[in-house]
Figure 1: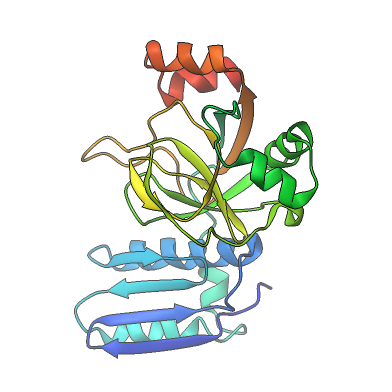
Figure 2: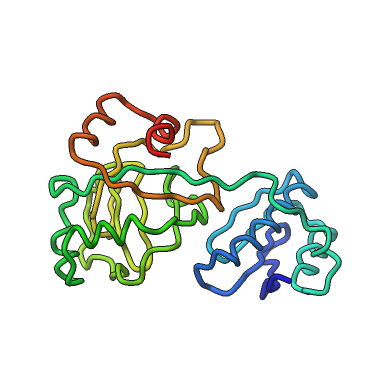
Length: 240
């Protein structure tokens, strides 16, 4: 039996939240996604968002919805027995990254702070299958879990005013790719030649529960992918 959610809140009429322990945990994510799908099916007009450990539901005040969320706190509730398993198969997406110095200006300093050679860093960074937890901050920015603890590092003391679109960074316990130009305090350790910004009006292909695998590419490969404007689907055919 999955561990039940810890707390239920009704902050305002029609705004409900279920909170889990504040941590990055793939097992916890699966429970959160099951509740999300259950509520979305039972209350199709609800607007649902989530983070690593919070599920937020906005819906006109509804006592049935409140009872549903409160029942979720009880691990003995019959709600667990009718909770659906995910209908969408979780996918693994291959994402090319170039670690060339011209595209990763912070990589030498980052490696020096960890006592790693660049090759060792790249091996550690590309080894995990990163779990996608949610999309936020801006369209196409995916919050991931699974960064090797040896690569955890505080954010930069002086954030950059401009990080190019495609910058892959590390900040704290997280790594991720900036889909568009943005200020940011993460260390620039690689660059992705793909556009990860979802097409307007369409469901993003990468979803919570999916996995990302980083694959190192050369500067020549990076240039070729950008020149030919290869998209996410074509890249899967090449590297997947």
